[in-house]
Image (cartoon, rainbow, N blue to C red; front, top):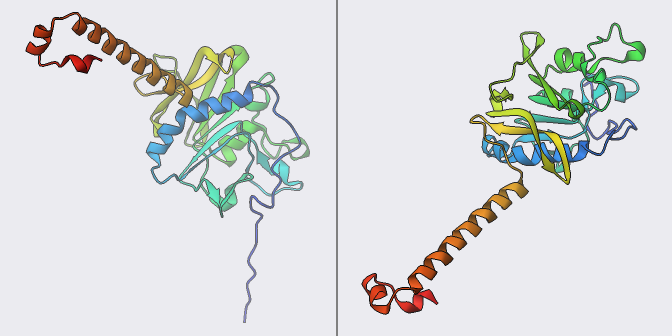
Length: 259
């Protein structure tokens, strides 16, 4: 009688969650928060069941290697649809493709150097010491539909779309944005003040070209609306107070209502 053994592959709890490097500049962390915060209402609407995952400077394991870190890429930001946000009640330490099977819809890299690393197309057969180019991994191994390369020093973003077997550089629309159609949003550069830094930030817009706001920005807009409404009410009350009791009575207004 033939017996079978089950090949057990490591999961996110058994793989390293860091390669020992650190965030290369102070802008990367607020940039990740900005694009995560502003797109959350869109994702919550797309996934009313909450089944989606966002990774920020987290590893995506796409092959088994020794050491394990060489089999992972760590995009600065990525989004995966239709997967649970936690596993067994715990946050993922990394995203492991052979355990999940669903590739990210979009990955974003924030360039800190000259952009060579983010555009590296070196395949495994040509890499030194097993090193494979980021661009090749996203395009040929993980096969991410959208790959964005953001360069704050150049105030620009490049977006690649996977067509058939290769990435094609997208052409921006009339607003200078790149449509990410499955999300119903556009990606582009916004010059403005965020977290006390006036920079060309990477941001989302809706398909009509309206900027997707952060929670803080939405609260500010609501406060401004409330302040305007309050001012209008106060002006109306002042006008009514200038009327005589007879005029107020004719309008059906009790003087005590204006107190």
